Length: 495
Ligand code: GLN
Image 1 (cartoon, helix red, strand yellow):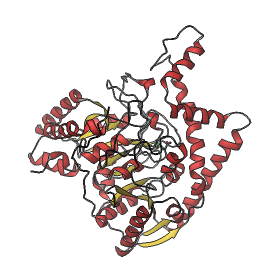
Image 2 (cartoon, helix red, strand yellow):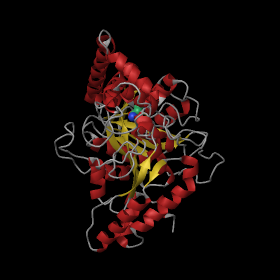
Image 3 (cartoon, helix red, strand yellow):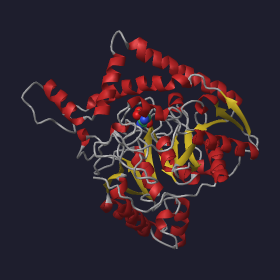
Image 4 (tube, protein in one colour):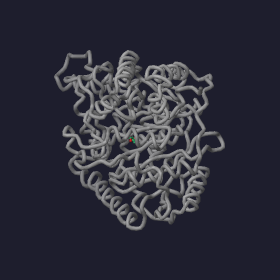
């Protein structure tokens, strides 16, 4: 039999119920895969072996007694380390939270546990989810499973890498400007950001609250829908969560694209997009037309300014959200206690935050300061409105929009680390849907000439997850992309 770690969630679920293997076998398979790959990839910050083992044994016992919790029952799932987990260290990859063991589970975490998922551990990210390469982690970077000299993308790079390499069957991340879709694209897996408010953020360490969303990574579109099904829906603990019925997303996957109208976004196919990425997107657009969709070019003119607006709005919100890390309530406190309380707070923050986080706090505080507020923050909010208006007009013409997910495939570790603008540009295709609050998904469609994965993005209007998944399933079928990251170990070993 093939290695269990290579099964999809749907396949693993069928095998479990047929009695071919147990939840403990599934956990052993991903643990073995982690043992083989972690020295190179550093995708996990914490492996909760004890908790996972207990959960897997319980899943087996429940199933044996007829207590079936549904599609995720007994499935090993990894969580980005900015999702709080009761009793399991949660750091957001920051020294300021090193050693923090939260007293509660976030809502998405609690729902996954209730659905029978086995939480394997916590994955690496850019500190406080600020970055596009996972190089900003205070605990060292993660590596791309396809090429260990390259980044996995970010900020949810660890979550993408685990699913890509089989050290988890599925995982969750957070997406503020592209942090699920971009690493999914760079690691050759499916990554999706739900509509703003679809998944509760209670227990997600906040970065930019008007943009943050939790969403799944998986190897297939079907698995993505199964993972989303388990966490979606209203939560009284998050006042921004949408109070309404949530359909079963896994129910809309086999409808095809016949008669659908699909818009290829002109501005996201221009300068700065790698020619091989562009060619792969064009080829898929042609295939969708061949499968019966009407494919036209659609403009989103404000997307030219989306990146600039995002890099004012997100740091502004971050500067307010990160004020809570003050050395008093939790996290790192300086040893230098000779001055005032304010000195203690300033020193704790200076010691605890890494350089990118400090840069964002400075940018955000500046953008919000009296005298500059309207010129920076106000202007960025007006661009956000223009962006939303552009999407609204586009969706009068088409059902979904398509584009590359990332302008390039995975880039070498270190290449953009010293150049924030080049790094920020990684999110040029993903940020527009965050500003609009709309759902979007990245599906792998092939490899470039260096055998690095290329991601294809499908965007839909708010609450348009069903049509988004419908198109994603067809893209997956048309692409026929079944390659997996090579398991051979490389010379690069995480220090
Ligand atoms: N790369 C973007 C940033 O650095 C997006 C991060 C995210 O989505 N969390 O802000």
